[in-house]
Image (cartoon, rainbow over all chains, first blue to last red):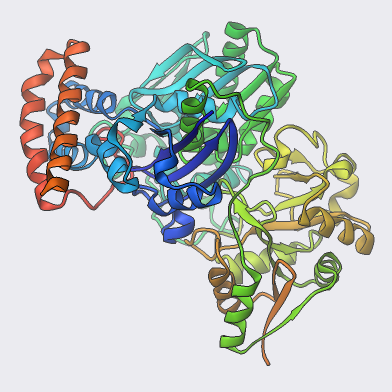
Length: 569
Length: 61
């Protein structure tokens, strides 16, 4: 039996995850502590918080596992620089700086950061860590596993056979051919921030029609065995670290969209064209993923599929895979991106030491707990009104039914990019005006971006088709809203008639709220969006929750059983 | 002093592991490039390293 810490870092989404005696004890992203969105450093505070959650000191760790192999990555970088010489000449100084100023020493730095012996720090293959993060916490004894991201050491896409505590690679596609980089390149072309704006592209796609299929056939060629190739002349990721696409892409699709320009899909033909490009990108990505998933099914013979890697956060594509890929069940863990690979690294370390495979992941509440006492002390200092509640669900339900926006903080914060009821902003799901209000004055984000519903799991099927499923507890898929219930769900129904549903099982605080909302309104659904302002990580501690209340036009904050409102006492 | 020596020991171990990796993979063509990079990398370590990360760094990360 062992204590193993997994680490991801030095790109985006630094995170740590702790597995003790085959049990997932904690998993947290550094951004929640550093307050730097997608923190790209090493997860010093997340690692310490994981250890604290497990009641361990660093000296108690049997192994620390980093989520990629630095030497293999350096090898790929050097080979790539040589193959693309002289175009890569401009990149050479930065490659040198990045790899040798930082990356190759990462295992030493982790040992120093945690003050553990260097020989306890090891590295695992990036895509294996991704695959482990999904399969080993899935409910499946046997599954095909598909990992798709920008690039790991050299691999951008891998197919795996998961069986018990084993993962065997059954196929891979290598850099520079990458669906993650296809999506990222077009994300940049559409004027969004890479590694952050991909969700926006997915939301935008629903407003367009996939009418650029011929053009995209030049960008990516799909083959009959599920593999694919990018038209590399259109992309810049081999020779340009800033942009990701080349002049030929603009010649093919028209000029790029300027970053930060306000969107007007109603009146601007140009913006509608960009929406059509996003729709085509989404459709082509789904086609590629579908072919890969079917090939994974053929090669493994499994009837269940697990997905991981940044591309697995594409909830719309996941829904299509569930419908069309030929698997009975599909699972995506909540932190499918690079942060999640920290969990996979820890699990691989634990299994390698003979520990049992963990129980299926039932909750994403793997962060640090929030303190009502701390929030109360802050409220007193700031002159905010506060009181303790006897019946939290009834209070939340009453306020939501009255059209209020309620920040809701309970227990340990969530693992992954989704607020699942631990650090959420809740509202009534019925009125599109509520959605517009949150988009405009709280989140200050693009008007086309949808909000998600949380619904009682045992009543989800009444309101949404294809729900509940293995995907819905962690909000990693979309489901069609039943037409007869659409009027009651206007704030959480996207323009294409779907919603990114979270189903909530019995036992948690959000379930009690949904029960109370159902009693009050007849519809056991709330709009559930993350508790963060524009460009900020989601709230972690009471200080940030109270700051959110003070800084944003919401009506109330509930921290455990403590109600805070902005009116001064 | 002992802390500094321990740190040096870890770095030398990493350099050894790096060279062993490239030898095992028979990437001998990369060794001259690697040596240049190692010298420059040690200089970078001494001067504080890199603080800026571009979005499309896949070619170099």
